[in-house]
Image (cartoon, rainbow, N blue to C red; front, top):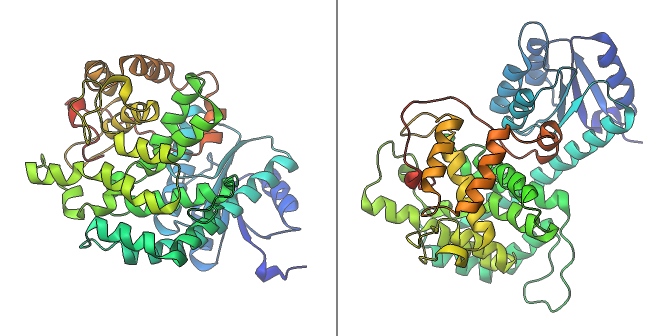
Length: 405
């Protein structure tokens, strides 16, 4: 049996004694459990103790759950969070997802539900830690002053580096004729999340962008009844659609005004760069193609290849819409977030020349419904995005959405 100090540390935060003690009894046999009756007390414990996971009630006197989540994310980015609340709403679920919670449970909870959620959270944390080590090494290869072709060449030639990544993701060796095994879900998710966060860390306005695009894309995929394989490819491509921005200078990403032609040309390279970066890593060619074409336009005026209509892969057409929607409804260096109605209007204006008109119609049906009939289940299970509804009166044309986002 593990010593108490070697067991994962869970901090239970709830102002009600009953739920707090119930959770303590459920988790104590396998975890080192600490308890707090409020947000301020919880943050003090986090600042003085090593904590792996926080279970958090949202409705507490004093510091509210949203403020606690925000502070945890700012000060302790690798601490996992499970929300356990008796007053769940679509808005609070969206707030939880905004701050990267691992699960969202409603009271009354049961033993199986709680232990499963805690197991998922701690597994995700272990995966993230393994991937951080890999990404630190990969970051050394992907220097900002390196030519992308040189980077891709080094990744292609570095067998140890490729094998480490495949070990994380459960892939066979490149070029192997053996059947490829199924990806380990939790290891894959951990890799995608940490990789997306690493890219987004260079630009505070992009934080959570990949998760939100994956979340919106997943909702639309469900509405379109895509196959399991199509949904999986879409999910991975959504997470990685901006991987090519590794090759874009931070100064360009943070440009507050309109990009000059030279800067725009640099940004527009990111979709092709993303495809090339994935080539040595063993991803499906379908996923790489979607990443390459997610900035194509329905009328053929997009990049990098000027594809039009249904020549553009379906998943790329979906990401074009969800990417633009998230860019419009999130803060950017050059403007505040636009309201949902304004963003919907811009998508409608772009339908038929920027975006697939049929997909815009389906996506806007989701937006206008407020997320659909099973909002909380979707929110809890997707764990993939942030919704920001801070209306601004001045719209930015849909044609500009996604160029920096």
